[in-house]
Length: 119
Image (cartoon, rainbow, N blue to C red; front, top):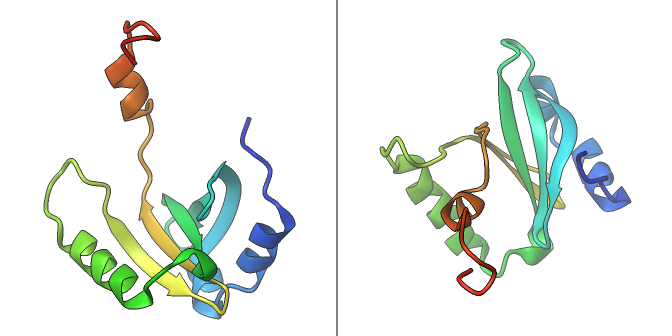
């Protein structure tokens, strides 16, 4: 069962730029974190399922450092790195559209069979 979004997340999504609303349809909330929310995002034209990380601007310490790290992230050529596809912004949040990856948590996979003390 997906976590429920709080009112702020839904309000931020409703205020997203027209370009984001035209390009993607936001779906269910997949996770809620202290810096933002992860949501399903379906590409309007193709139906391709992506993931939208909605980051509240109030959680970003340095906007320039944030943008620089996103640009570096986009340039990664490794097949083992989930790539950002698009980025949108409104007055409250930054929306990072990424490839959707399914499967178990990497941390959980690494701890499989380990005792609580080992973890």
